[in-house]
Each structure stands twice: as C-alpha cells, then as structure tokens.
Amino acid sequence: MLDRIDDIDWRRLGHAYGSAGDVPDQLRALCSPDPTAREGAFGDLYSNIFHQGSRYEASAYAVPFLLDMVADPATPDRELVLYLLTCLAMGYDESWLPDGFPVAEYRRMSEGGRELLAAKPPSSEENDDPEALYLRALDTDDQNRLYAYYELATYDAVRAGVPMLRTLLAHPDPGLRAGAAYALAWFPEEAAGSLPALRAAVSTALAADDRTTAQATDGPVAGGSATGGPAVYGPTTDGSALDGSAAGGATAGQPAGVREADVAATALVAAGLLGSAPDAALLTDPRPVVRWAAAVARARVLGPDADDATVEELLRWTTAAPRGRRRSAEDVPVPFLNGDLAGYAALALRQVGPRHADRAFDALLDRLPAVEGVEALPVATEALRLAFPDGPLAAGTPPEALTGRQRRLAEVLAAAPLPWSVDGHRFVNFSLLLDEYGLPRSHDEMVAYLR
Image 1 (cartoon, helix red, strand yellow):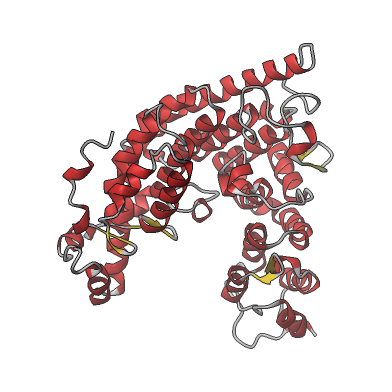
Image 2: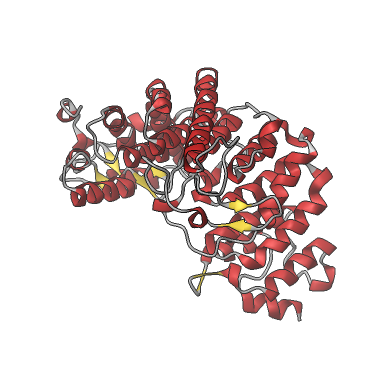
C-alpha cells in the first residue's frame, strides 16, 4: 500500500513546517509493529499535514496512502488512521455542527486557488519554507482562497474513499463501524449512496445490542437495558445522568468504550447530517444515547417543524448533570463534538426555531454554571446567540442598558467561575467568545461590570 510513495517528490510539497520531505517516513511508521513508533507518527502527521485544523499542499497527497491503510485489515490502529482521515477531510467538527459540512460554500471559496498554487515556489531542502514568503506576498482574499483550495483538495481526496468507508459499516469491530459512520457524515454530495448503508448500520447495531442484552439477562429484552447489558449513559427518562461506568464495562467481544448502541447513535446522527430524519419511535427507545441521536438528527432535518417530543429530549440532555469527569479521546464512544452529547443537544436547540427559544435559553442557563472549559463553549455559544440577536454590545454599554436575557446571562456568568476555566486555569477561548459580544473577558471583570 506504500509501494508508490517514493514516486512523489515530497520535498517540493509544503506542510505546516515547510518541506514535506519527512512525510513518507511518518506514513511508513504509521504501519509499524511498534506502538510507540505509530503513536509518534500519528502525532507528527496530526501536527504537520493537519496543523491546528489547517491543511496544506502535502495533505491531499498523503490521503490516498492513508485510505489504503484503512482498507487493509493488516494495518494496526485502523480506527486512529480513519480518525486522521476524517480530520483531514473536514477539520474540527465543532466548526460545522449542528448544520453539517458546507461543501458548496467551500467550492465557491476555493475558486482561483489552483492558479495561486501553480504560482507558488516549490519547497526544497535548501529553501524549506517558501510558502510563508509567498503567503505574505498575497492579499487576504488570495490567502483565504489558497487555503480553501488546499482544504477542498484534501476533502475531495478523502471523498474518493467514500465507497470503501461504506463497506466498513459492516465490519465486526464496532469502533471501526462508528468511525466510518462519523466520516461519512461530512460528505453530503455522497448522501444518496451513504444513507442506505447508514440505515442498515443502525438496524444491525440495534439488533446486536438487543441480542447482547438478552444474553446478559438470560431472557428476551426488547430494545436493550441498563441492567446487566450495554452501558447506558446520559439523561434517563427523569432527566438525571448516568455515567457509562454505571452498567459495567464493554460488552463481550467489543473494545471498551464503543458499544453497539454507540454505533447506532453515530450512524443516526450521520444520517441526519446527510438529510435523513430517523423514525420518531426512536425517541422512546430505552437507550438514552439512541434517544439523543434521534432527537439531534430530527432537529437537523425537520428544523422548526420538529415535534415536541424531539424538543423535549434535547432539553433533557441540555439540562442533564455533567458526568463529573473529563473525557479523553480514548473514552468517547460517540465521536461528535468530542463526545459532549449534552453540548451537541444544546447546539441542536438552535435548529428547532424561535417557538422554543425561551425554554432553550432557560435550559442553557441552567447548564452553564456546571460545565467548564471546552464543554462550556457550545452552551455559552447558544446562550449568547439568543441573548444578542442584534449583534454585540456597543463599547461602553452600561449594565442597566442590557436586555432581560443579556442581564440574566451576565449574572449567571458572574456567579459561576467554572465556565471561565480549564483545570483551574483561565480558558482563553471562552474569554474570546465573550469579547466577541462586547462582554467582559474575565470572571472578575464580569463581577465588577455588574456592580
């Protein structure tokens, strides 16, 4: 699968640190039998051909080799390689949720990018970063056009592998199936072929989960259970929260963290992002993660026409108590928004329209004091959007000039230091978000402002 890797003159291509001459060895190391070598190669590639979400000239050239690795059953850590491919295709998913990937806009933005790339001096060992000089010589519009072209070229390179990704939806490994469903979610131009495969994946996963639950309870159980079967997490029907550890570890034959219900949920959300609303009956499924996925997907497709049951499920998730522990990439069973299902539900409330805006705002303010750092961002983003429909405050706006919603939000933020921080340290991204709306950039400043 790497036989033709040396046919490419990688030194003449660029990535985040200049010449891409180091990429072939990193791709080879990604297939190494040594786990340490694979981990190092993934880190290198994640930082050079996908640097802080940006893609480069070399990124698209690396994609065919990564696709070959994912397709090859002998490749170690196929899920990790698939995750890298998905990131290369669309960047960070928080940029696109809850609406999906705007590929038509990207195609428009990248017009003229091919010509700009053709005019760029090549990288080399002697001159390993001509791109930086070239970019500085371009105006802002041309810089954006060139980077949009890099991103679109990489996206289309991954898109070529969509038929292969669909075949992974039938793979025995639930982690690989979930990763494939997540990847397919970002290719709306391929929806006609992907949706039947995703629907079949949902049915297969739910049936497998039912069988596993029935075996664990020594009897037939319709729809799964939180007792003795696959772990259930998220809000229960009364709105309380369960951590995945409450029902034990992974089911038999499955890796820890990814269960059949998680595969079904991932495929449901992916189908929703591609325009297919799941059956309303799934809103009463006994598995919370399935109900969450059904509500999120239905909100995405139905929008303001979403039924009350969909809205109620989103509100339950938004106000559910946080799980009480930080997640990592290794223990996120549903990959969207890095596993922050409540945060995704908060974003999805945007799609059900103004009829539910008051209840949505109340739910967001209920949750905001209880979350920190990254998990606070989607909640604050939606609360700010509802509180500032006309844009940011004018400079020097006194607190008595705030509207009712703006005042309530400011008071919640003044009373709650947690959202401003990550592990006790100031969270700069949260401060920047508030600054966009003309609000104070620190907790202390917010307290002083209201006084």
